[in-house]
Image (cartoon, rainbow, N blue to C red; front, side, top):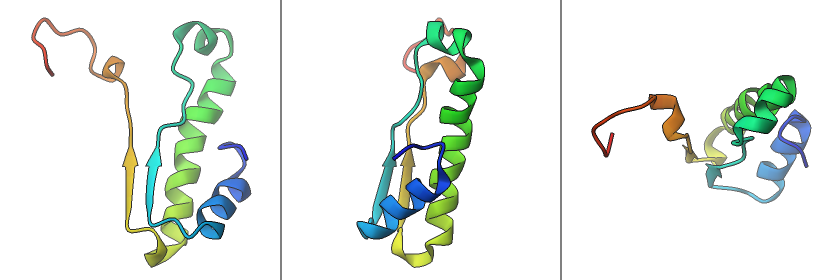
Length: 82
């Protein structure tokens, strides 16, 4: 399925009786993101919303959701780790 298709996301979680969702799917490369910003938005933003909404709508079936992010969200820092 595709993250951009809400029905695919909900069906995948419901059909497999998922208890914990680990969401790692995203367009992470800067070059392709700049070349296709709309597709990147659809996958990263709408796709994440679809995962979270499907988990919410499935109620108590999904106990937890883990969402990965990028260190690019924090910007440059002279001190590591963040």
